[in-house]
Structures are given as C-alpha cells and as structure tokens.
Image 1 (cartoon, rainbow, N blue to C red):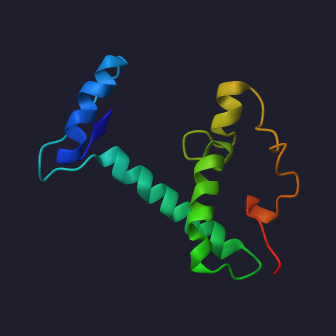
Image 2: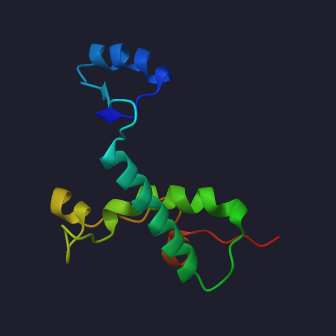
Length: 114
C-alpha cells in the first residue's frame, strides 16, 4: 500500500507491518496516483448518480451517495471488465440485493418522505 507523506501515517507503517502488510509513504511533493485516481473515480460516479436521479437530492445527502458508490462500484461495468462487472468476473455471479434494503430506488439510493 502507498499513501501520501503525512506525518500522522508514520506509526501506521509499524501497525500494518505486524499484520504482514507493506505500507510506504511517497516522497513529499509527490502523490499516490492510484489513491488520487480512486478518489476521482468515486467522485465522478457520485456526481453521475446524483445527476441521473429523477428528483433533486440535497447536498447534505452527498455522503450517502458516495457511500453507495463505494459499496456498489464492483457491481458496475468499467473499462477493464466491460461488458461484465468485477463482481461477476471474481465470483461468477451478480451481487444479490441486500436483504436489509429490498426497496432500493433507482441507482440504489433511498428516498425519504417527511
């Protein structure tokens, strides 16, 4: 794993090493390109989901949309898995609908009436 050179992450190197995980920090002034790109992908997909909704969702719900994107991103086709999805390529089947949330709205986001 690679992360930006944040002083707060230095103790994490030893913690992860005890679990057998190699964690390194990039040089100051550089950035972890894969992490930066992952953040951009999640942000772009969140904006696409919100733009595709048939109703306006307030910005206060944006973290929930981002959480849904992170949960569902392997169930969506990407440039390397098209026309399939990462879930299907790895497990051989689509991800089932979550048993706690059988009434998902379009794009997996929830609507509430007050």
